[in-house]
Image (cartoon, rainbow, N blue to C red; front, side, top):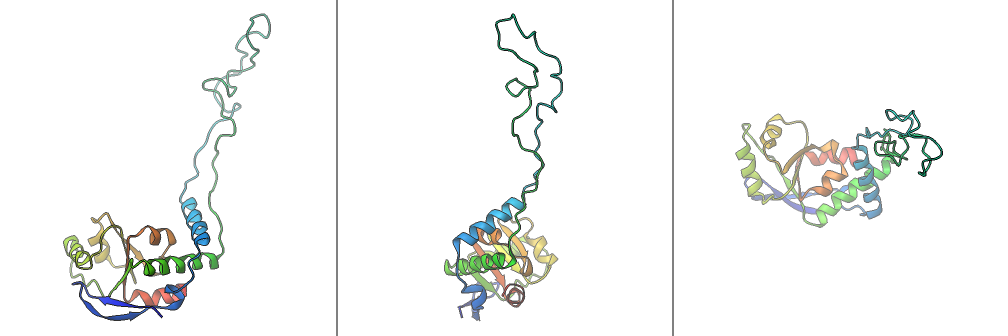
Length: 207
């Protein structure tokens, strides 16, 4: 069972915390991680792109010039693909990019991402942020004390308006709920900062 320091809002170590083997000592399967990340990014695509075929573009109904006697190659319509303004050949049309993955695969990838962050020393646990007001400078001070630099993913146990509004003006900080974790956000973060009370919820949902 992994054991890491527990920090307070001033950056001081106030104890240790035991992490679950199911979540933080799981196998890291690069192929599964890649597949889940690919599926997650694909699901974000709107898929509204569209092109017109030669039958859909405006005009082109009239033969541009007579069939014979001009010395030029015969042409039947200006909506043909080789004309400027003509239809597209095999162009994109609206479609859904979603990929359905087994729940077990997504869980395996999530546990692998958490384990990788712990192994790379990119994961810390804080007892509580203890914000008393909506104040960006106060939250920024807590993050500085914890040496949280780069992209920081804060895992909160529940919706906390004070925390969310305080982080709103910090472009490198993202707040996510413990029961809404996803692989892309975990991998992209330079530091995953977990509130201690989030661990029980993560264990309940993902273990």
